[in-house]
Image 1: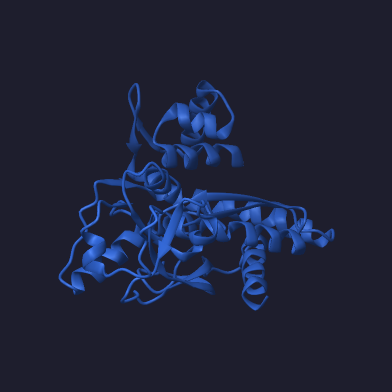
Image 2: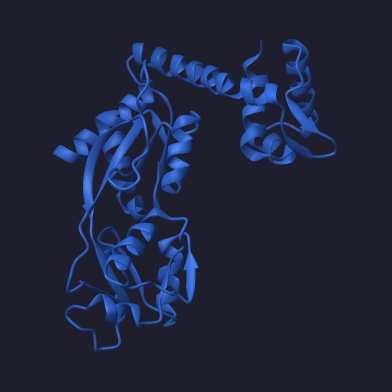
Length: 291
């Protein structure tokens, strides 16, 4: 059985679109379709439900998918393990990070390069749920996410830091030293959407105080929120990890009653054997934590 054919099936299950799956595999759509037919013939089962477009995987396809993911991951780990015996770990470390933790990506990349200069780093901005799914589906080697709020299951975690929230607004020369939650909720706000865990943590905190947020705009990235704040459209609430990156026109204001800090850490799937790249991510996170 050719590994490439399994990669076609996994890509199609992920992309749910023939053209996008072919693009992800760097082949033409006819090549991908022919490969899937060859895989079906080899297994003696129809794996893909399709007419002129992708409809879904058949029951057999769903049953085969996790095995295909494991085989691909095992082969990837095999190649990385072989490279280690030659003196230098090689490969691409796929790291998923919640938006709140993206500012620490530079520190992680620097620490990884010191330990494994031949390893390439691929960083994806993901929700916490996407990280959990990506780890389980062998699509990520590691993730940086919340470890106390809705922690991903079956992972090994290394604590990195604790997140604290600030009210961020454009500096108009009348910025207070601190702000209350009721006062903040009365402002014109832009926030992350409710599919983001940071927003769910914020909403739960507000609900405990009889408050709720009604933003005039939502986004899935802090870059977008800062663009709105910079335009004078609204204010926002964001983690202190972004405070050093704020432009001169922005001011981060602490809250009168700070939210409890949210632990953030690096996580990898708890499986054996642990892949060399996942192991490298864990060691890198430990080095970051201990300095």
